[in-house]
Image (tube, rainbow, N blue to C red; front, side, top):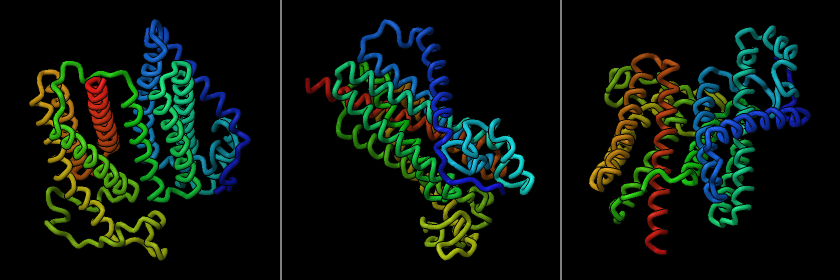
Length: 370
């Protein structure tokens, strides 16, 4: 493969211009549709957060497509592609790398997939900077703090994105990158325009416990799912509900959950055993029971709180059912791309729903204390 330095910043100006162009188009559309016009400065911060949330959701799903299409190393350096701002300018190095390894990680299609992911990642960061500026102009201390935390988070997320490339898809880094994207969704959903909470009954201790437990269960299940995906362990267990014809298959837990290692390798460099991959997949399946129970409790608590909350209960319950269906489809249908992407999108949608519930609880608490 044609080698390239791990980091080369000469393309940064070109990448910044592309990101600014994307943001300009997004803002013009939002302004034309009235999403940013005729709003107070505080409302504009929330509107920008909602717009950024939409872009972040798309980016998380496209990031899953980048990984599932094996395009994560489509450009082997960072932040550009062979020190250029686009695969067009890097056409010759890409062709040389593909000639050496026709079935390798570098190709024109994979380079475009990887770079589109990076373009929109930089556009997302630009929108968050605009959120912070808007919050500062609005003199809203809470919005400014949240926007500042979000900016710091997206910078860290960009660093993880760089490491996924330069560390050659190290499983722990890729899983961390996925969790970072989900965390960014949660932060943005808390800042987006409030869509829940009006007319709700006052939340009691059980409501808060149900929400906290559901959030924790969702975090752990997404982490386990990310570990399954980044280790390519989805098909380690065939069949359902059994795994490879057994209710308790042979598993190597310590090897499967050793985090400091390369993709497909043990910590000592030897190839990872199939029993380790089975342990990863089976753990994700087993924890799904606890995840469904926690989400079910939250849905039940929402259902008891009135008509407004019941609509949200139906949405969250429906997303959980979709997650079960797409997860099962990944196993019995041999990990089809559509089911895998839907599984990631469902998890991201659940994160947003939980974020909205947290925002509603915080807003209600502030209203009661004021």
